[in-house]
Image (cartoon, rainbow, N blue to C red; front, side, top):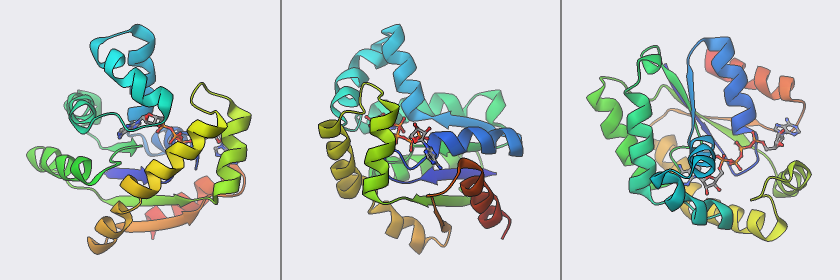
Length: 183
Ligand code: B4P
C-alpha cells in the first residue's frame, strides 16, 4: 500500500504519518525530516537543503527526488509506505509516478488533511521549530498555495484523492484518516 499524506505546512502530516505507519505496519518517509537530519549532519544534501528549509522555500526537485528514490529502494519499503510531505510540486508528482512504475507499484490513496490557516499559524508558532517564525510560516503557506495545492486537481482527476478535516485531537484526526482509507 502506498499512501501520500498531503496538506499545507503544519496540518499534521508528520504527526499522523508516524501513527499510521505504526498501525498499518508500513514504512514512513518524511522528506522534511530527511532534510532536517541531513542539515544537522552537514551532508552535501543538507548543505543544499539548509537555505531553502530555513527560508520556507522548496528544496529543488532533483535533490528531493534523489532522497525519495534512495529511500524507496530500501528493503523496509517493500510492504508499502506512507509519503509525508512529498510530492509538493507537479514535477515531483511526475517523478514519483515514474519511480513507482519502475517498482511495479502505484499510489493507492492521497489523503488531504484540511486545516484553516489561522489554526496552522497558531500550531506552528507554538511548536517553535527554527522555520516556525511568523514570516517564514506565511511564506511556506504562500509556496504551498502556488506550488503544491494545484496537485489536488491532479490527484482528484486520477480518482485517488480523499480529504479529511484536520482540526480536532490527534486521535480524532487519525480515526478520520483510517475511516477514509477503509472506505
Ligand atoms: P515538513 O517537515 O514536511 O513539515 P510541515 O509541512 O511544516 O509540517 P507537517 O504537516 O508535517 O506538520 P506536523 O505534523 O509537524 O517540511 C519542512 C520543510 O522541508 C519545508 O518547508 C521545505 O523547505 C522542506 N521540504 C520538505 N519536503 C519537501 C519537498 N517534497 N519538496 C521541497 N521541499 C521540501 O504538525 C505541526 C504541529 O502541529 C506540531 O507541533 C504538532 O504537534 C501539531 N499538531 C499536529 N496535529 C495536531 C492536532 N490534531 N491538534 C493540535 N496540534 C496538532
